[in-house]
Image (cartoon, rainbow, N blue to C red; front, side, top):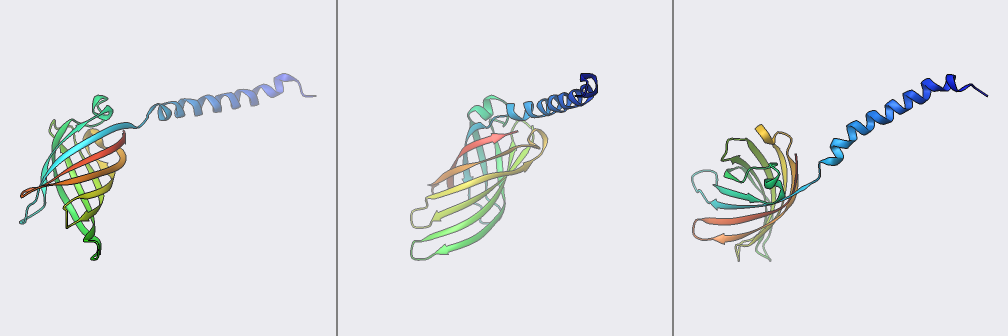
Length: 163
């Protein structure tokens, strides 16, 4: 049988490794997803990108993870598919949101299912990245759109964010 003092360095090394892992994992575990609802008012622009304003609410705003309001502009729009028998089109849209308080920007990719007969859309969204306070922002969710004729539509995003 080996004496205890020969095993002590091994036990100490294992204890240090466990404590190091706990020190790293604790902040990660502490970061829980924060709920958010974003409402944007889109203005269709036939001469350039669509644009508008937004307001945000929920735990993500209350905790300072995201700003409460600002503006946005569409930076990319791509048609992804069409179902003529249903009047449905699939769109991929990328939007850059700029916070009104100057804290930064965040980019969101949206996959839209649009019904051209009714003007109603449903979509999924994911945060691609950001600048300033939002450089490490992540999140995703779902949403819906209702027409706001004749100028555009109103988008409502519901989901979770992590920073």
